[in-house]
Image (tube, rainbow, N blue to C red):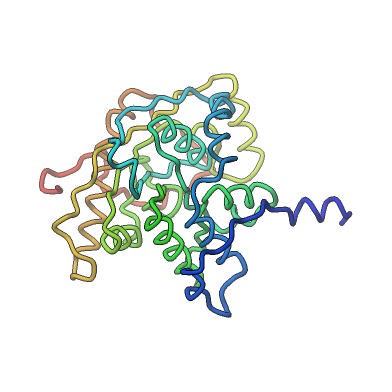
Amino acid sequence: MSRWAHRLRTWRPPAPPLPDHLEPVLRRDDPEWFARELAIAAAPPWPVWLFLLRRCSWLVELFGRVEVTGAVPEELRRGPLLLAANHVGDFDPFVIAVALHRLGVVPRIMATGGIMSAPVAGPLLERAGGIRVDRGTSLARHAVRVTEVALVHGGHVVAYPEGRVGLAPDGWPERGRTGMARLALGVRVPVLPVSQWGAQEVLAYANDVTKLRTLGRSLRRRPVLRVHVGPPVFLEDLEVGRVGDAHRARMRIAAAITRGLVPLRAAGRPLLPDPTRPTTGVAAFPGGIVPDDVP
């Protein structure tokens, strides 16, 4: 590897200093990135990230027309927020970032460890407030701690309750895991459902030439990329640690996302077939039908 290639692979923007009150959180066996992410979570939004959100949204709209409905009340924008989104494809974090910024939100997006470890893009996402999630490993608990710090310091954290790109055959959100629900109940912050549709057309599921083909097709067709932000999910009657409440919270969040998705899908094209995407998932509410007994 050449010297310049090595520099490119190891480059990262300088992180802010770690506040003194977070020093006791660190342990000797923590991964090297944990202190950086804690410091970034406690800091105000990175000016470069604000600049990109303000000036570079047109890059996302090269591949589709972003339409945003719903609102985030001003009083909620001033404090911490958890934004729970359905995950339709690899392009949707960019769509969500643009959509939420239009509504006055500066998103900190949870992302897989693979993306965060990529050269250049990973360090930029980390410095912008991205939170690494190493699912299925002992490091997953670090994401919870970083998210807690971000929320305590007034951050707006975007999380995917499904924990992956949704794999339900009909494209409706899966019920996901209880991790985000437990976090919401423990930290006691508002949870806003974010429903989206259309971004799955921009990038196919597979990591091969199919992705490039669908990307090029989106440049020509520019599909509509719809995002809707609903009112806060009612969780006030639930408690962290009480038996069954994490499951109830999870289902309420999935129900709110599904309800918001119904009009987006009705206004857009049907789910286009993607032969590279597995269909092994199960929708929380098949067909988008949410029973009346779910709050």
